[in-house]
Structure formats: C-alpha cells, structure tokens
Length: 151
Image 1 (spheres, rainbow, N blue to C red):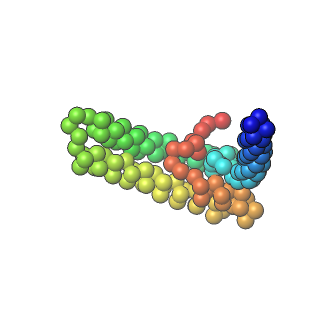
Image 2: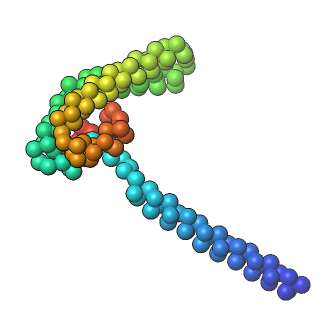
Image 3: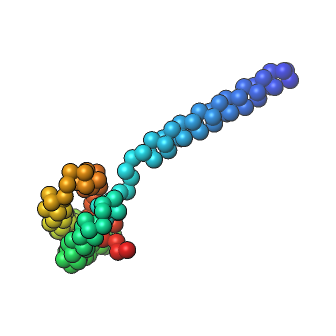
C-alpha cells in the first residue's frame, strides 16, 4: 500500500516538474518572440531613429497637429464620459448613448484622418531609408496613444 502511495506521489511530482519546465520554456520563447516585435512604438518615439533635422521637424509637425486637434480630442473624450454616465444612470437611454459614442468616433476619425494626412505629407519628403524607419509605427499608431508626448 505504501509503495502505491509513494508511486502516486512521485508520478504527481514528476508531472508537476515536467509541466513547470515546459511552461517556462514556452513562456521564454513567447517573451523572446514578443521582444522582436515593435510593441508600443509610436511615430513620436520612432523619430529618434531619424537624423536631427528630420527628427526635430517631425516632432514639431506632430506637436502642431496635436495642439490643433486637442479640442476635438477633448470633445470626443467628453462624449465618451457622458455615454458612460448615461449607461450607468437609472434612466438608461440606448439611443442617447449611441449618439454620444457615434459623435466620439466621428471626432476621433477626423483627428486620425488629419494626422495621417500630415504624416503622409511629411514622409513624402524623406529619403526611402528614413521613410522605412517610420513605416511600422505609422501603420500601428492610434489617436491619443503617446504621439504627443513632449521631451
């Protein structure tokens, strides 16, 4: 009887150890893979890869775009906050929530369109090697997610 218990405990322990080792290997492989991906890269931070005149002028252009868009971004944020409040209220009105969310999305889309157009116009004047440094971040960037950080 003791032998059966000892074998069962040994098997369970071995299974646990093997599972832990396999899990650690998989987590390590995932971390290495994710480490090679441009995660969280913004156009603003990608400007660091450009030579100084291009870096400074790109950041200046981005800052001007965000300064101009700030009221629209604030209004979109206010619309989302109002929609959130309407959702939580006792007098829930789905149509009013949908209207506020649609307004916020439309404002965010306008800002995104303006920013994309400005960045496209800017990168059109860069040499191919510098444009390549901005390609991934341009495709992955989103409104209000760090591009307007100041140094």
